[in-house]
Length: 473
Image 1: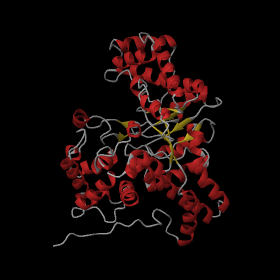
Image 2: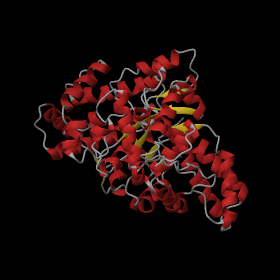
Image 3: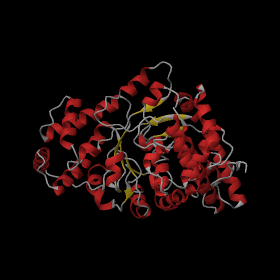
Image 4: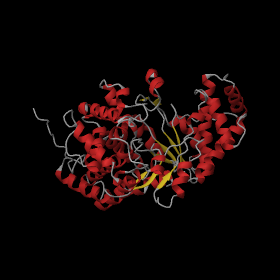
């Protein structure tokens, strides 16, 4: 029996409204922003990828292994993470082909998911694949992509330019020397903009494993004594300034909640000293972290870094998987989160501070209309962050627009963030967002709630203006 060859075709109207009249306007709106440069203000691409500009080793390492959006669903379907190359470093060609076969054999698990949209877009638009993944087609598709990866046009810098990326923000540890960013900035053959992002989570969680050792390293990086609380705060300030000097425009924070209750200085200093000795209680550690989130806002007012909050995730939900494969391997699970009372202490002090930017993201959809939109609709500092992670999906993005716009409008939203470790998924993710936003705008015009010229202007703003304002790009 011959192998089946099922075509892979991307419909030009995908994700647009089904009504023909509305769809026609949505398509025209989309065409007006389709080729606009990509601003990627939050992601996890390693800058060394662009420094070295070496050919990608194989299709599996490029498209599957680093992308927890992909591996988690395959794991749920019964494919062990070890069979997907997770945590194994460089794969042999036989291993990589095996990983690719696992994806294609389980292609059905991605039906109806945004992951399928992204992967199909990558396969067809980047690599020219014209058949649907499956057990029969796995090797042919692998060979086609592998052949592409040997060509200069498919090296990282060439793809960066081809994707139309204007700004790419990485996510970086405060102790990072940012040598990769310096190398790119000094490279006369490189004209792209890659900027670091200050991510201090591990240094703000005294209950975290090896926190005291991490704080000691922070002091070394800042050339500051972190033996007491004041030195600790100063070290964070020093490292933030270092990031600003290297092009950073934002600081990113992700904790279980966003409470910002301040502590008297004496209490903060006492808890800090106890935490260094491993003697602080869980409650005290949480109190210090909440106090420090307010300190981060103060620092943002002083050094100009936009402050982004990504709360409401139970990290590393499955301990055996974490122990074997480490973090960011697909088992972080959303939890409910409250913003209004939690952020009041911070916003009482800094919510109207000139130049302060606070971008609020959530994995809990219930707070979009109840809390985030009203906060963004009053405080000049607050922006409603785009749906991300489990919510960067077609229906969730549409719900976000409808939930937020009626209270805060379009101008108080952040613009799309791709939040990806999978480099080739960046254009696919931004394309999905642009199509969906243009569909929402076309529906507002069809309902006579928006004029057509306003829809075109708003479509352009969502791509090019909002992220610049929210993230100070």
